[in-house]
Length: 186
Image (tube, rainbow, N blue to C red; front, side, top):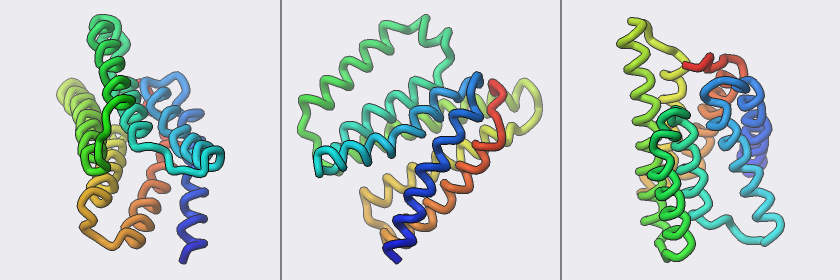
């Protein structure tokens, strides 16, 4: 069982290196680029320091994921707010002593912001084109699996091993989808 989990984990990491290549020059390139490098950076950190990466790393990278979903014009128009938010977040992460539960609550909140940003794009696209954008729908489902993983760690509501295997398999399927289907600036 341990080898299966380890194999799924490493296969997922390698697979998730492909979506940024496929999403190059779409509005989702930086989102998938950040996603692709989170796990390899965590592994590298763990191998070098022989410690688990602090949860503050995930808070920071998830905030970057959220920013990557914002329109460039929106970031330019609100650059001071985005920059201030980033500085405040870095300060809080560095100088705070959040418990694991508090960090997980912050991560879940950021994931809900990410979900909201994608839902907005989904709804606007549907309102304008009267078509369901499958890419957005799959991205929403993917974000929901991330939220459920964080929620499971926070509350321990299910068997951790079984839940990890099921959600990792689902995320591998999502990884295949995003490796094949482009966001096409959706």
